[in-house]
Length: 142
Image 1 (cartoon, rainbow, N blue to C red):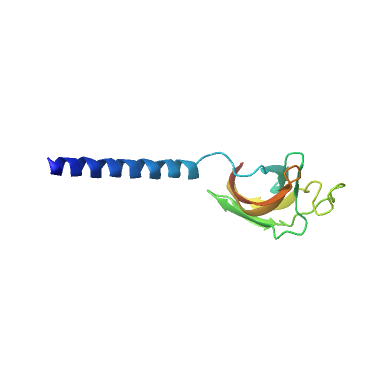
Image 2: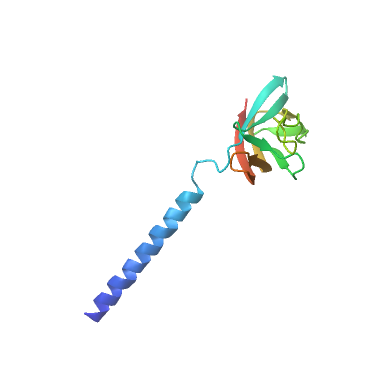
């Protein structure tokens, strides 16, 4: 009888631990972005593209922050050239921020997936907080 009680107790404990770890894994692998930054790639001509970074109103990218962006190709795409320094006009109300960021030019050869990784520092003006946004995104280049 005691063996059965101990067995049921251990089994219940293992089931609870398993469900907790599955819920944590589901949260980590969720498709909900952790930042409001929208990243798109626009074709300019031939193999020349422009990476566009957008934020909602009342947000801004910090001018003096250590932004880091890395582009790489996958599935047949190779990034041959990229200028990934953030640049744009100064925000009229908040001089520490860009009003918007100009497109970042890059060149590729082939077709496939463009992998964008890095960290961008942005601020929410209404909440008065600044946050580093971790970037990890794939964009298909045809």
